[in-house]
Amino acid sequence: MSVTQAMRFLKQHKISFECREYDHKVKGAEFAAEALDWPLEAMVKTLVVSLSDKRFVLCLMPGHLELSLKKLSREAGVKSAQLATEEEAQKLTGYLVGGISPFGTKKRLGLWMHESIPAFEAIGINGGKRGLMVIIDPRDAVSALKINVADVST
Image 1 (cartoon, rainbow, N blue to C red):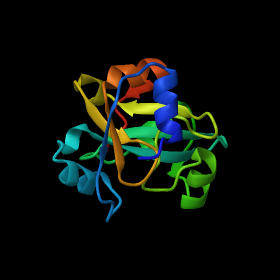
Image 2 (cartoon, rainbow, N blue to C red; image 1 turned 45 degrees about the vertical axis):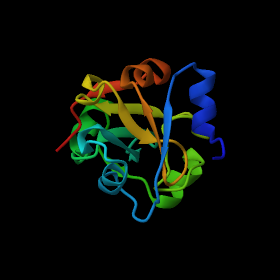
Image 3 (cartoon, one colour; image 1 turned 45 degrees about the horizontal axis):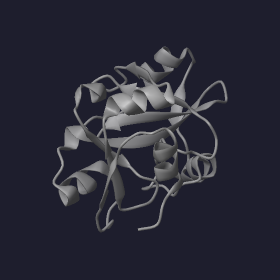
Image 4 (tube, rainbow, N blue to C red; image 1 turned 90 degrees about the vertical axis):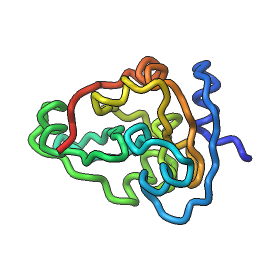
């Protein structure tokens, strides 16, 4: 297995993690959770969002919930928000869509995490390439990345 930028970031910040690979046939948390036999609520998707003030942020959402752009806008103090295009997401993060990790992104982006995630002992989150999840303690992610935690689901 090749070392990804996300894995380098985790090592650099002394965050312990376990890698789990799967055959990436379909992008999405449901497929990854099923392939790895991991609870969907603890499988975290990383979404790139464009805010109306021209900033981009990452949103970490549990696999079974949808992001509320309205709630995120309110939390971020902007008029509106929309999902970034695939091109924008890949350019900002340095990762392919379906393999976007919040760790080691090309551009430093603000981060929001759904309030339910820190309650888990371990979460699965993309490790920087399609078909690679890292299993980590979500509290380590919160401290390493300075994440805003809020209810940003529909």
